Image (tube, rainbow, N blue to C red; front, side):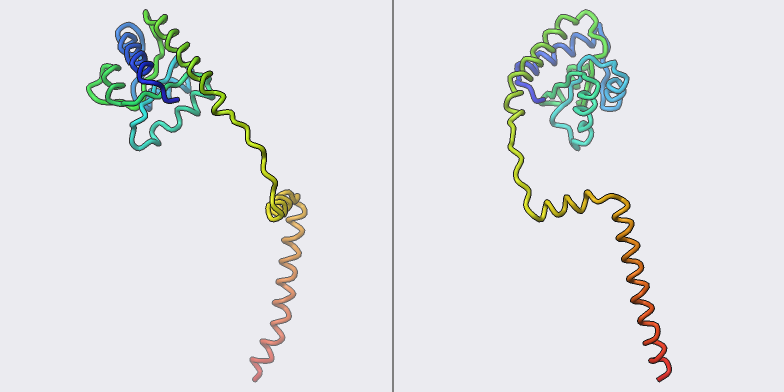
Length: 176
């Protein structure tokens, strides 16, 4: 979830304070491990990572493990906040240390932001009527395995019959 600049600054400050007295995981591989082990309290990823495939799995993993995820605008700022001389694609907070209150504050802000944007995401669309061709396609897909097996046998039998009919004709041509 992309966040406003004000909240991004709060997240950067949280990361800076956690790096002093808490525990951070820096980089896509370490963050992935911390999510899979359910150690992470908050996952922060940068939106300007190229190629995006590097960070595409984080939202799914985070949702599966019910770990909050935030997307900040800059990998350079994220790396700087984490104490790295280069940018980083992702950071996870494993132990907030003395910054626990600050972490709780950021998590509440994220939750409030999610609730505010939830109605927009949950617009219900009426299912459209299927056309005749779609209905026929659905019927074809619904055939049981026995039916399709029977059809395969019938096709192979008809092919055999056709090949048998051709054989006498071939023999006549060979005689000429």
